[in-house]
Length: 248
Ligand code: PEP
Image (cartoon, rainbow, N blue to C red; front, side):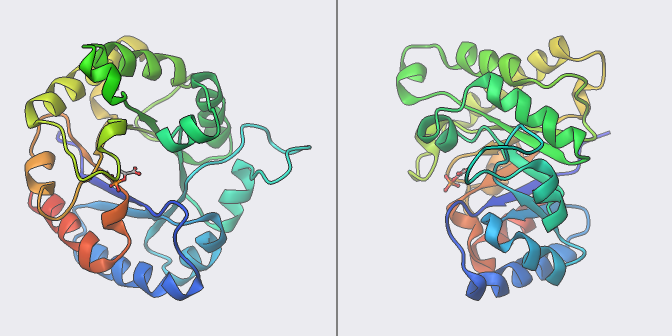
């Protein structure tokens, strides 16, 4: 059975209380496309309000710590994001891997922590432009996947997002053939890493997805949805992506 498309917006460090109405507008569009799973990951400061104001719409976090609690100033635990109303967390986004020096081992520990708290995880992987130019993209991405892969994972709580670093926020998108090749490689790697059920794990594409290219990207084999940054910040931009997923 084909996977339901999953369209996730990553608001990054954008969004004040005054932008909660954009989440309500997006939730309204999502509710008219029940064949698509849609979600928004606002900054942590908006999770509680966004989830209480849009009870039927999925809200996620963008990160959490791998420890249950303790002396980690400024960090947020899985139980905290759950209590705020998040149903899952993005983990290992390339901006965190670069800016906060997160390692594959950190990402694996975070994924295990969110699962232990009863939440889902979206683990991000992706190569830099230099790695792609050197012909190492598949090796790098499959290595990240293996290193970040949580124990006991299954499709009920784990999603993978392939995000070429050079395509994030740049307006540049890989060739469809390159997306197909990478998603097939990730699917094969999942089969190696799991004791069954790998076909059901959703693999999202992320990197400058928008209303103009979503249909083409979502039609690629093994592309089960999208992780969307810039084009998720308004209903005007995110709505067409949800609509493209519904038509895919
Ligand atoms: C992202 O940050 O996950 C992302 C895909 O961003 P953008 O859509 O803006 O490229």
